[in-house]
Amino acid sequence: MPKSDYDLLGKTNRIVEQTTITGNIICTADLRLDGELIGDITCKGKIVLGPKSKVEGNITCKNIDIEGKFNGKLVVEELLGIKKTAKISGEVTVGKLAIEPGAIFEASCEMKSK
Image (cartoon, rainbow, N blue to C red; front, top):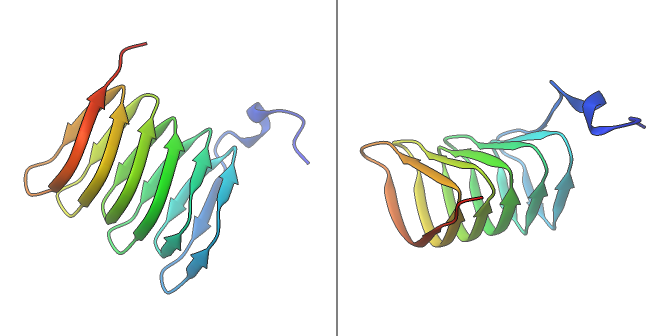
């Protein structure tokens, strides 16, 4: 078991394609999801939702890049990066927002500064 969050730097949890999880994920290290999740994610690190990912639920994290589909409530402390292949719907609260042309963004959005 790591002694501190520092011990987890550079380590990434991975959930690969053709994997479906029903339930919640709580992690300290970064997370890359290329499968499907029906549930919530709470992550102290960065999350990457790959192009084939699908999430139905709520996410709370420090930073996130989304290339796949997300539906739910998203709370991002710092930067939300929405890539051109992404489809986002629901409620979004962010520190900073970057949306690539071609992305579908059908969500209410609130930006909060620190």
